[in-house]
Image 1 (cartoon, rainbow, N blue to C red):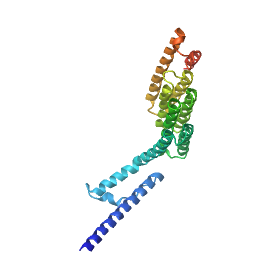
Image 2: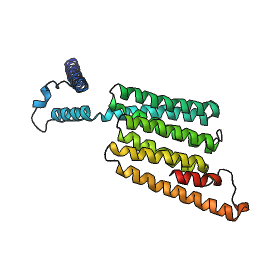
Image 3: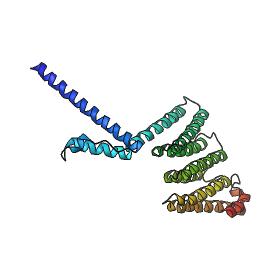
Image 4: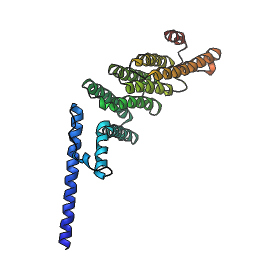
Length: 273
């Protein structure tokens, strides 16, 4: 009796494995059909009566195949895990801070370049690579200056400007609104934190000028009018801070350091805007 019970359980397990294998094969066929634009193969489980667990599983697999949610979540997780490992190695001094920052910049650049290459070859579904690359590059620049003190504020701002121009050009070229939004907002917010409240105002002004140009060009992408207004609002706050500090410096030079203030650049940049 015990032997027959074990055989029966083994048969049930084999049947469940066979059913699971069949569903995975069907799921792969659906994803492949979606990638090449071919019609999806008919699903034998779709004919099950409503309310059956098999039918629910089929609906869920179809939803996942359409939205690619799992693929994007897995890609973001993989990218962030690598960045977290690099950060942990740097914090625990397994690698030097200089090496960690250099690897972080290279890693972010590779993500941006790989994302652009995939877009050029029609793989628009992997947009998370460009987004992660743009955000990570801003994070590396801010931490390399503020936490580790390895780069100057000018160098950090140049990295942010480069990130803005490259990610913005990719978003505009391939009409990707999410990339354009991150390319404009992430470097702009990061520029306000580099050395705050004593910013490198001339370089920050250049960054905000480029950000406003890209935000205006992004109106062609569609439904990005909010981005232009948001960028203008942040830019007004920046100019208010610069004008306030410049006024205090002109009235009481001893109370306001001139390092990074760039009073002589105030009017030329204002005219450029």
